[in-house]
Image 1 (cartoon, rainbow, N blue to C red):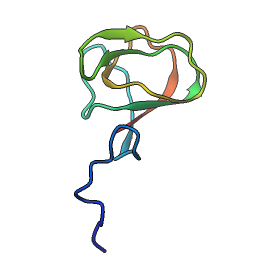
Image 2: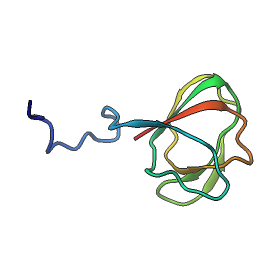
Image 3: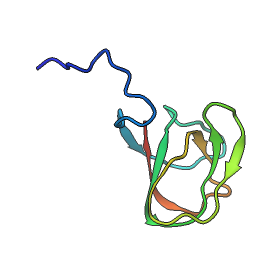
Image 4: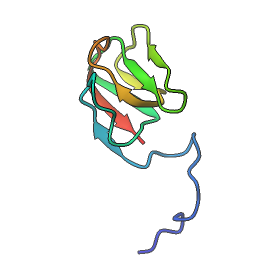
Length: 88
């Protein structure tokens, strides 16, 4: 079946284009920048490099759930949340 939406931009508020588990790293960027992160195991902080500006940011304590975090790297140092999934 062909995709009738193949030529439509989903926009920032549109559905995700994919997801992958995140392994926080102090040296490696994510394979693809993400626009949301789900915390699935334990809540905590997320330290990340903003996908557009390059600013290094650290959240406050976040609960389990989905959070709007536009990131190209999730840092190991400074991230205490566990069970992370990135959404493109």
